[in-house]
Image 1 (cartoon, rainbow, N blue to C red):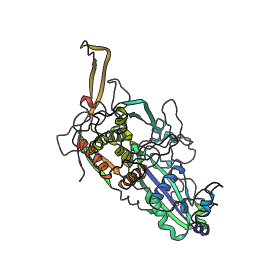
Image 2 (cartoon, one colour):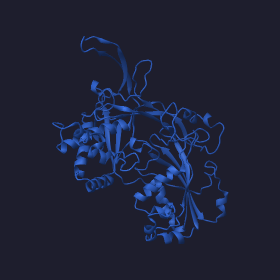
Image 3 (cartoon, helix red, strand yellow):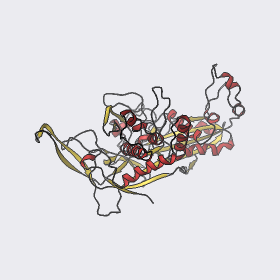
Image 4 (spheres, one colour):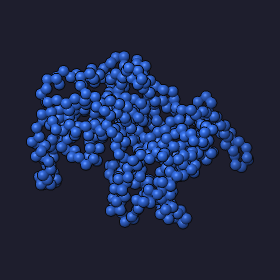
Length: 487
């Protein structure tokens, strides 16, 4: 392979201008924090969020490798230093100690304004746009880490800044190679529309799903003078491309779909109160694009009630652990605290195979989750305020200062076949089997792939049959949902 790398003749270039839309919230963090949030987004010179080209290249590289392709041949590799591996490198006909640069070039993904124009470079009045003015105060998603007892873990509260769902970005891809590599480049573009493709952080929390809106394409000889006419500005070069490619076909990964309806009140807390209540349901806005006009027009829609993917994932993981222990004949009777903790939470084998687990302080031994969920929204629900007071168990009277109110949401329809929510669950069965096999190779205790699947299916059945409530205040009767699998 290294001989092919050295002898390959770069005589052709393939170019694409890609417009993508964040189907869910997007979070590409800078690694910094401020007094408002624990995780701040990457922002450009205009103070607007963007996606670094390195982030896109990294995800593409991983997906290319997962597809069974040689990443070194396309993405290059770093030269090897003299080390203990030098002898191994010299004896490997597929590696070259000199290394090779990437043949793929990507730009940063820049945001589009309400008129569908790319904001590339310094624009003095960028945030005066009807859509982009809302990006001066981005939404913050609240999180809390739960224990196996269903309560918040100590120091488990955190939040992060996110980009509105529906936000559009534009970036360019360029591949150098030979004329007969057209299909290779189009295979790369097809990765962008795979169900498993995610950008940014929190992909296992429902973030980062994207959809391809438009691909403009061109290819030419390496010395074609037409290339010199191309502007580096993403907005100015959109008319330079001579072809428009159809959207890539989606991957064949199976998506499990469930239709849900709330049977009573539900509360997914925002973490804040208002003038009416101390606890309020979380709502979020999405960017909506009107494509019926000559040019697409984007605007921020009204707030909708949010059912976060993290809340659904946490409930399913907890119930999956319960069912797996039941199937595995492990019960709490007569067990020590250490034995129980070894079978609950992220220590439970089924939870680890499905939802992943953290590694050590150096990140070793970790595994990403093999179950992907997305947020759900419901826009025709209403509020109701519930007043509560804590009771003194000794006197039977109220506790001083313990009066509080919560605002829950409810949805009603006389049509029993009306299901306002659609829960999509992407399950990577191939990687789950790999994880089970690896566990059985490394551990004395063997686990069964069938038992893992049966436990998760039992948890989904509990959700659809109203036995697994979602959200907060479930002990007060909130959060009961019923559903059915999509036909």
